[in-house]
Image 1: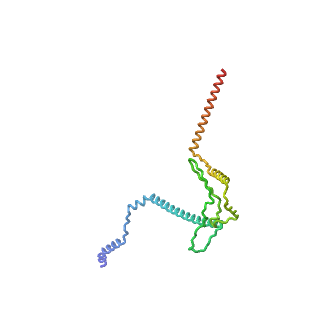
Image 2 (image 1 turned 60 degrees about the vertical axis):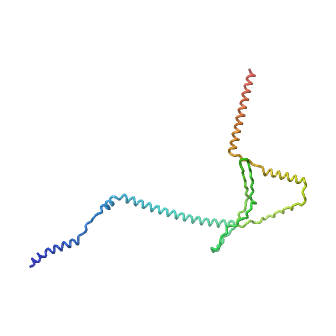
Image 3 (image 1 turned 90 degrees about the vertical axis):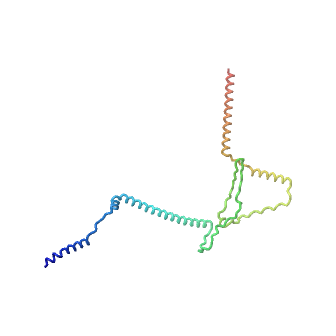
Length: 231
């Protein structure tokens, strides 16, 4: 009996073993040929890509450092400007009010009265050029902040106008003096241009050559006359 049962169930055991083997079978390894070829032949390409990426990172880092340096430089310049402004105000007697309120506005430095008392202009004219000379007198910088100060020296009072009429001789003298001063003021200073200077130089050279030729001709005539006399 036992042998018959074993012989009859032997096929079932074989089928069960095959099914178990199929369930536990490892799947086959399939390679992608394109990816495999890219990996095996792309060492140089990957190396170049890494270098390019490192260059980009270095450029970005350098740009960031440059921006930070410029920001720091602007901050230092702003601090120096405020310090210089404070020093200038202290030197000229100004003062800075730290009230802490933002409502007040700064109206600037007090401007000095506009007058041309310290300016003197002289005009020199010529046929070709016109020159204007402006003479500026020295001024006190403190007047820009504190305004003009009254002079310590007393000014001499002006003489009252004389009511008595002048004589004829005095009027004539005054007229002559006025003419002299006007002539002095109207004295023109001539400025030659480059073309005028060149023309003058050419004329001088021509005169010199002409004089030299004349002197040479006279000397030749004298020598000829001396030879004839000797003969």
